[in-house]
Image (cartoon, helix red, strand yellow):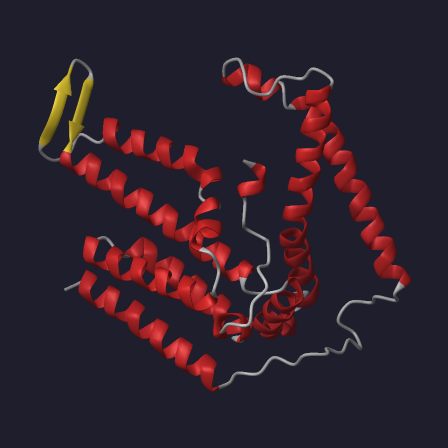
Length: 266
């Protein structure tokens, strides 16, 4: 399960999605996520799904690799589905037996919630899969630069966010190693009820936190040894530039999102 998390990982490639300005990708990703929750028609979801599929094909990221990232949220999707199906009493009754009361509105909300969560996770994963951590840092800092005039530490915030994303795969790998080591010593993580399985993870959390603090200390020491002093006097090997390809991507994406919103309120 831990190996299935794709958020924070980078998939190398030379597609136009990989080469696009990371600032454009961040802004369009945020806009796309907003439209996901605004859309409430199946035709709108169909358009968003086709657009997501087209983006995957253009980026060259394997479809199976992207779908693999949905496994960790499978429990959340099932939980949301159960809540909507069994606790929404509006609409026409489809099935009723004792205290179980399933309505058409409940089923419809459950389906739409599952679609929203699927598109949300795939979109968030696409951003990190097609953008290196360094470019993400530069893009976030560039977008937050106007706030620095108000005293907001834009560079430091961007650096912390990127480091957090960068260390997600590292911590997941560390967690997997600790769980295998504990299993070799007789630990059982798969049997028992929910409370017992949660308690079995306590021996994993302690060494994981110790390892995380050790890695953070080593990273701070390495940055100090390289004379890191924040954004002051910092130069970049690659300057962010908004090109024609970025304009085409932005125009196409915003047109599609605008069409979805227009059809929603028609």
